[in-house]
Amino acid sequence: MPNPLSLSRTRLSRVAALTVATAMICGTLPPQSALAQTVTTAVSTPNTPPQTLAPAHQLDWILTHHILPGFDRLAQTSATLADVAASHCTPDDPALRAAFTHAFDAWITVSHLRFGPTETDNRAFALAFWPDSRNKIPGTLRRAVTETPREELATPEVFASQSVALRGFYALEYLLFDDAIQSEGTADQRCALVAAITTDIAHTTAAIRDDWHNSYAVTLVSPGPGNRYQSEAEIRQELFKTLTTGFQVLVDMRLGRPLGQFNAPRPNRAEARRSARSQRHIVLNLTAMEPLALALAAGDPALMQEIDAGFAKALKRASALDDPSLAGVADPARRFRIEALQQDINDLRSLITTRLGPKLGVTAGFNSLDGD
Image (cartoon, rainbow, N blue to C red; front, top):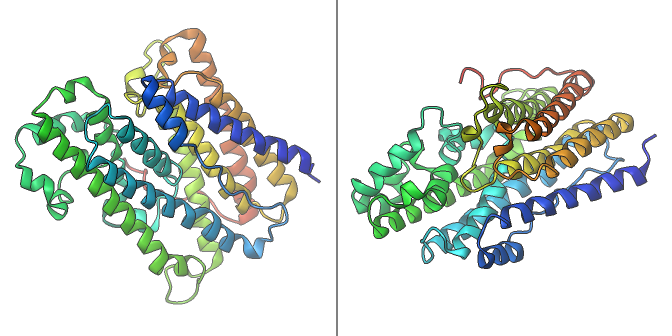
């Protein structure tokens, strides 16, 4: 049987990892901004399923303790971001950067839940157009701040029809942290674009939240003939797929893209490197995925212990990198630590695939990244 004290200690390590991540992003900002971030953007510790969670209750727990709170938080922080941006639109404004950090954190903690309302109308891509393999975002932003009429930016319905390269958190990151984009157009036009993007984010995340509460929540716990899911097994398949997709993003994209090859590292491909959030996203992503993995392992305390230990190992290494933008991929000594983290996550992915999948009677299946 797992040792409850051991589980408690590893969960305390989650709090420590999140504290390190928060301090890490603050350390990249001017002192006043860092103070604002420390006060206003403490990362929430996710709900963790109890060891005694019964398999019959796992779907309800995942919905009410993992999915709905995550999308509620995303909609709330995004609404706050839009409100702040309406009166604080300059890139280095402490209040705007703090609101950006809080809302972006909330997205990363639900970004593995790529099914249902997040996939409707390409909402996930509208929030997170990454990776931008063809570097479309900067060119699209330049045209927007130099050529797009203000009325098109001020009308949410019109803006929502724009290219996904102009929408979401990654486009906003350029506006707040990229010197070249900050020199394009006029300050008024850039402010209008900040307001348009943040309003669009708020509308998109509210739509996702509302769809979950108004319809999809019932769908997820009510399988049967004529419904989207015919059985609980199909629902577990969907949830298991979100885990395997999350690991794919971590290993192949958040780590694999900047790592490149030993003799050809690609530090400029690190996610959100301009805002020094690359390492932070890995910590947040791992922390958010663990409760889902543990809940799906309900009824098997030994497997829950192994999963908990695997996440603890990966989180400990991720939070100790001291490399906010993953620039260390180009330094052989620091690169070794990043590669070791990638291997830890690969080991955890293998555990999930070979132990949790068969327990649930499911396979990874296809996901929204296949074919990209």
